[in-house]
Image 1: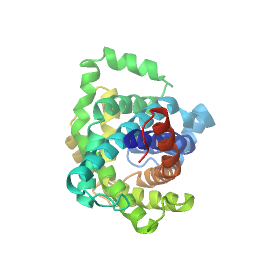
Image 2: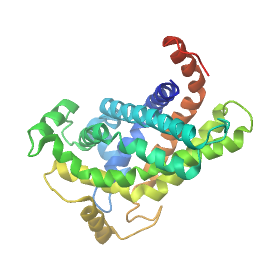
Image 3: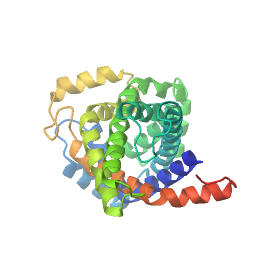
Image 4: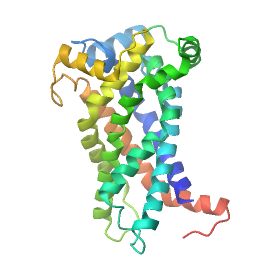
Length: 295
């Protein structure tokens, strides 16, 4: 029951976050798949000229479906695996004490990986809609993928890249939970501002560290659309050869990290804030709906 409540609260937070931050996400993807020397300002001007302000919401529907599905699976598994770990290794330890950091990192990583069979096709559809120059709809993209050589199975060639990007939540959520436990000190939940700030900081740290893998994944999916079949490692090497190693906020493999951070931080902050505030309320509804005794 706790797993379902956490998944529902996290999903609600994800939807709210995406509605607020989607234009930034759209711009981030455009920057990541553009050629060297293309700036966010140039992309903004191009989108406004060709599609108007609504152009920044191209692909919103598929993105909300993808993100909410991904977070539902991840939070459900995260809570379920965390509860299993507590029952085995932390019997008698108060719930206010977070799961051991190393174990929570593995749990968060597994929670993301186990959802990949659903997330990978949805992410491919979203990226192709966002980068389409002709305004393709999600259904048109799905038809093209289905009729392409290998069909949907071909999308899973990016699986190794996703294994690496799954390291981001493996850093983000342990940082959030450890910070949350430190701040609470006997309280039931964080306040609105506290959960927003802790969510933003934990996301920023994880996102900066893992950004090169995120950019490689987006580039891979964009190249698949044009029929180029390169491995994620080959793409990363090509980006390195063309643009250099770089450093956070200094181009190279971190090109576009500014847009990624602005969107990612705000989205995570909204999502974790809503999740934090709704969890106990949703938990009560779930227990009442299933006639279970609330612990």
